[in-house]
Amino acid sequence: MLKNVKNNIYLVVNKLDLIKDKKRLSNNIDKFIADFTFKDIFYISSINGDNINKLLTSISNNLEEGPMYYPEDQISDNPESFIISEIIREKILLLTKEEVPHSIAVVVEQMKRDDKNLLNIFATIFVERSSQKKIIIGSGGKMIKEIGTLARKDIVMLIGEKIYLELFVKIEEDWREKKNVLRRMGYFKEN
Image (tube, rainbow, N blue to C red; front, side):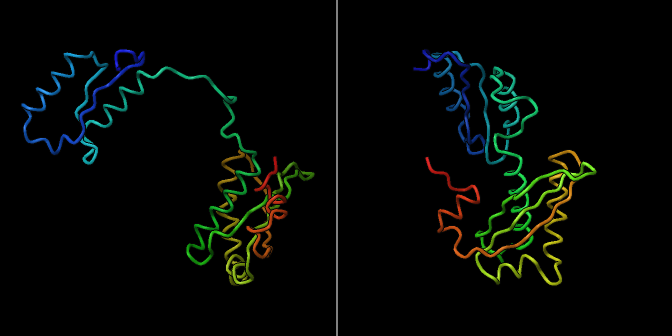
């Protein structure tokens, strides 16, 4: 079957760290080589990492460059507002750890430039319970300020310019169970 394949074919022998009888292994490899010409042969140990980099380098060097499906400067097929909302959500989960379950949604409500050409981003953090809202805001607003500070740094790196970020927290009970709310948040689209 391999003779019908047009691509480069490698023979990769794993678990090198467990080989006791190297002569027997050599005999088996000789049988493979007699029947087929491989691009290269690698003896690896994935658990120890032996020769993994050599294998990956060889594969990388022999891959043909594929077509560009997106413009060179485009890093995602998702809109910028979605990526920004995910950055904010990531910071919430990072900072609150187990205190807040994953029933948090972030929606970028508006992105607009002010008269000084500063990009203003307004995002709403949706939670399902008032206790979650208290955790997100934190004592004296400390937690939401830290969320905003960390998110702002990543958003600035993404966009490449200074921004103003304002975060709001809103309770939307059982939002994950409501199609109209999911639709409004952009999570649910009907065909």
